[in-house]
Amino acid sequence: MSPKRKPLPDQILTTDDDGIPNGVLDFDTVNRAATRLAFELAAVCDDEAAMDRVTRQYVDTLGGVTYRYAAALALKGLVVMVLRDAVEVVEHVAPQLGLRRHLRDGAIRARENFPIGLEAEGCG
Image (tube, one colour):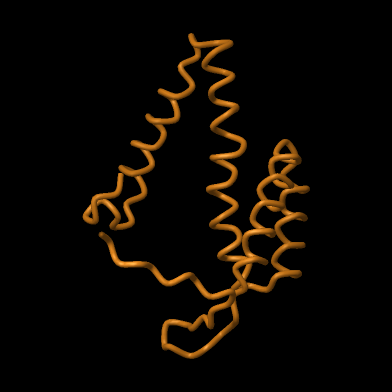
């Protein structure tokens, strides 16, 4: 039997690289903001200026610390709630495009051209 995990607190204190507190992170706010941010960006994905406006609005409203966590979670949300379904539709309607293969090839090229040390940790 695995040990019982303690539930996460509703809020945590965040610190900078020197251990100095720089904000309080509210998980509910992060989750709500991330979901909204993901869909709002997806809705204006054809308009770079609109995406910049949405991003600025979230940074201004949430503050830098909360925005960073919300943006990271929104990125996963975009993949899970938007991109995965879009790729599935394209693969069904136009399999000859090989969209999934192109995405995988792009990931390989990104790992090769933009190393950040994750490879040593077993990522990618």
